[in-house]
Structures are given as structure tokens and as C-alpha cells.
Length: 231
Image (cartoon, rainbow, N blue to C red; front, side, top):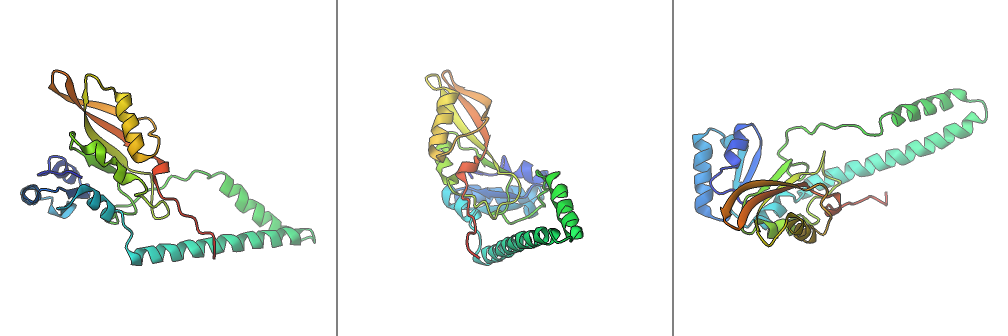
């Protein structure tokens, strides 16, 4: 979100990550592109020059064409689910009249499904940022914490694939502050509880002031959950 000239973006791109890098300073973005060219990672970096909140909002906005495709797929899937339930009830009623084959098939499907309640999914490399990103780096310790409110309702769960992203927010902690107070402020901005926050001490910047990186997985409560209720 605050990419600068690329101290985080370039190494990530060198590890074959697809990186969306943004900075409000146009000179930083210009040198970011030069660094990407020097390090031969142009194809893996998309550079932007805008406000960090607008950048994240646009990155997670589902294009109208894509949303129609997904909504159509969800409706079709929901209709199939309803039809399966109708068929299942029909099979059960038929079983009372001696149609045991249908009952055996229905039970076999249910038994197989019950063994796979939690299926691990693999998310493929994609440039559809509204479907999946792994990490968000907020390396502006003086004010990054105040930008956490952008994640409130940012992810639309019905379009998302795989696990929710990890947020890495850099911040300063002074002698009269604690890690708990930082987490409390972050939760207030997110309007959601952070589960298992991780603090990494980066360096001391003054006798009573240290830089930390707060890492946590975006809470489910911070997402937009939409369900299809009508067919």
C-alpha cells in the first residue's frame, strides 16, 4: 500500500510473486518502475500512483462483467442443490415402494460427502485481485495503523477463493504503549476481533520508541458475506 521505490515489492517479485505496488508519491512510483526494469521483474509488478485507500478499494472491486458471471454460476449451483434435494426426497419416497437402488445410490453419495467435510483448495496464480491475494504489506509505521479501516467490508466473500489475506502493518510503539493497546486500536478500526496477532520487533528508532510489524489474518467478520435467497 505504501510501496516507495520497491524495497518490499522488488524482492517479492523476484520470488515470482505477482505484486500490486502503490505509492502516493509519483517520484517513488517512477523509481519503482526503474528498479523493476533493472531487476527484470516488470512482468510481476503492477505499479499504481494513488491514495492507499482508493488503491485497495479499486483492487478489490469486482468488475460488472465478472460479478454477473459469478452470480449466474451461484444461482445455477443453488438451483442444482434445490433439485438434488427434490430428487433425494423422491428417491426416499420411491424406496418405500421397493426401489432400493435409488436409496443405495443416495446413501452412497451422502456417505462419501461426509468423509470430506473440509476440502483443502489450491488457489491458482491469478491476476484477479478481488478473488485472492495472500499478503498486504503496510510499511508506513507513522500512520499505517490508521489505514486499517479500509479493510472493513473490503472482501466480498462470495467471490473470494481460498484463505483470507495476511495483513502486515508496521507501527511505532512508545514506552507508554503496549502491544495490547495497538491490537485494541487495530480491532476498533477493523470493527472485528483479531485472532492470534503476531508482533515482530523491527528496530529501535529512539530510546523510548521501537518499530514493530503487526501481522494477522484478516478476520472473517471484516468481510462482506452475501447469500442468494431468491432463485
